[in-house]
Image 1 (cartoon, rainbow, N blue to C red):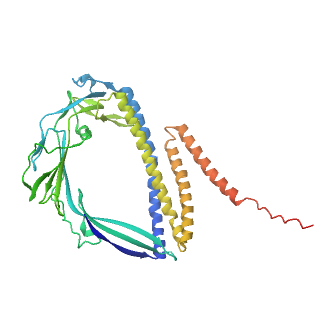
Image 2: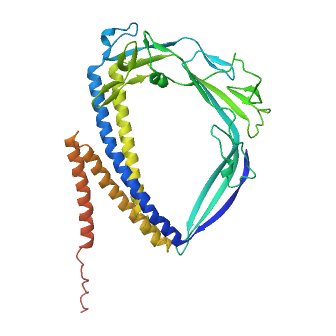
Image 3: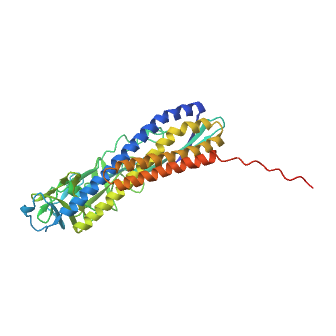
Length: 394
């Protein structure tokens, strides 16, 4: 439910903005350095991961899950089968019991949530006026909303803490045929599904609140249809035994990551998949992660350059129209610098591992710089054509 909203207006002078933008130059520089480090590290990580996967694809052997062959100890093996467990997992507070690989208790509290939206308008003279709208609504949230930090804290009070903690339990032993999965592998098993409350029993009161079942939730409070601030709701999620495929180094009747000069290797998929398909998926994931981190690095580099160039825009903001022109110009410059530095960093990082790709990237970067300089030179050195007067009338 909503409980209204209100606005506040703040103003900032041109001098204060200029001082703030000058301070942003340091932040922008730090972001730029961090972006270059991230881009360089990411390329090395991608090469190492690709090398590890290639080595693993050549070494892996598929073995049966029915028996453990000690001759394969230390070898990279591929095993597929169905997981099994012994015994049930129990939430001792609610008495909920389930034969599961993992059992999770998810807790939410009904509380006030503050949402804010700000709109800033530049004024003649370089100052700004910011109107911030604050809205308050009661919602279910698994994180405590600290009402002491609300703009209107007196009328929207939340409890100081969530009185019931979230919790997770894992099976002591999860087996894949004759093999035993290690804790890291158990943590990867899935998918997680909601636990039905049908046929289960629970206590009448927890943390001094009555417990009432509502669908797949347990409601802790007096009126489920009209919850109050501080009421709780609890749901349970679990991971059932199922099909799984593993690629890892055999260690006795269990598994461990294979250590190679370029990194560690251990793969798991929640399905029956052959070894080569698992390596194909791992290579795809490595490519996706590499491009994602490249995008993050280039974005951080662009933001860093924008912050470094921002004082120029702020200086021009005395006339808002000029500020928009300068903002467009600094954006173009920031994009150009981002591409030049970003591509150069990626090319240098690949120099040792992939010389041909590195040379191609450097050539592309140099072509970009040359094209920008040539275009700028052509615009500044273009000859001036004198106006030719019309012939005199006869």
